[in-house]
Image (cartoon, rainbow, N blue to C red; front, side, top):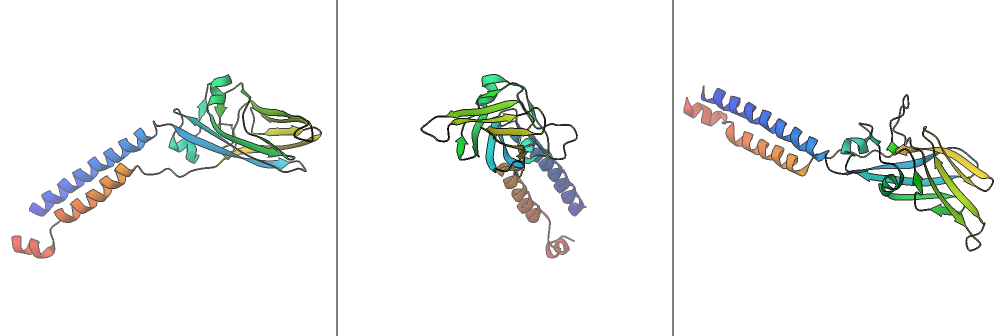
Length: 198
């Protein structure tokens, strides 16, 4: 009976621990997260490379991992301010800032099998005589899964695809689980002590 009672209390403790871990995981989603998308080219003779990172308190670790999709509604300068990193290189020129956004940020596009940035936004810069050749590099993100870059007569198209991250288990949850294991080990009687009690 004593062993049975101990096992019952251990099961109850494990259930409480599971609830605590779940609460910690859900509360960790309330913190600001960052989603990062890389340029994946689909057409064009001149290769382009790029990456964009967006940070918001409305994003979660699940959004960053690709497990869920997000839809940030802020537009204009508020949306541009959510860009925490951006670089794009094409035809010998590099852009480092997003200049406009009219739709907010989302990766929710119906029928798309992967997480792709779906927003209407631009990044542009006019290069003068100090940065030959002279011209304007313009990246246009469409409100579809496709994006376009141009510089003079050169152009390329592609998609901004999510770089998924893993969802980490919070450190407090790891400590709780490891402590539970030690507690359970210390509470379950060995065979020798069990025989002694009988």
